[in-house]
Image (tube, rainbow, N blue to C red; front, side, top):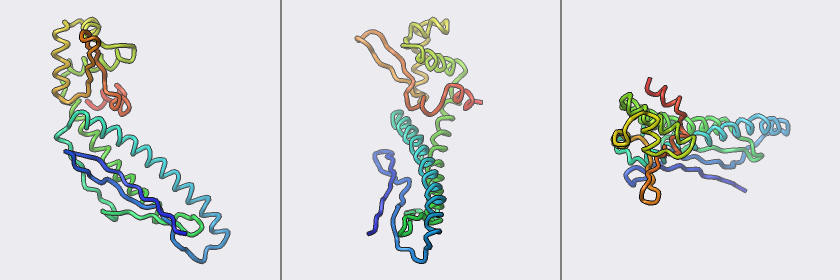
Length: 216
């Protein structure tokens, strides 16, 4: 019996789907395997395959956070690179009739992960440009929001108190951050108090220390 699993990953930009990676895990007939070879391949190559899949899962999760973050910001400047893979439209992975992954499988898994990492790298570069565009004071306000939120609710009032600025100045800085594409969320409570948040996707992608280093 032939078993085949097809894995695809899509993203959307301007409501148009872009396929990032496509590959198959299948079964094909292989001959002349000794029992010893099958056992050795299962122990070595399947372990390697599982290791590569775990790495691929981590990359996909990171990519998902990146895409979600930039989709929420409606980033118009975002573009995606062409992928230098061995088979641009399809990557195929096959195993023997005893469930033994081939070298081709490991190679294509490697290429699939490289493709995804390229996209993650480009998204992070876009993020770096956004934070590099901030003035020292704008980044100071962002850092205060990031830090205060870890302790509780962030309002214009406690930000003003922490930074020794007027609430009017804080509002102005928050608007500047939003205009520059920094992922700040404003939630109004009881139609009176505005609570500020840093988007969760950004927190998953980068700590405050990492964002500071992005600006260096």
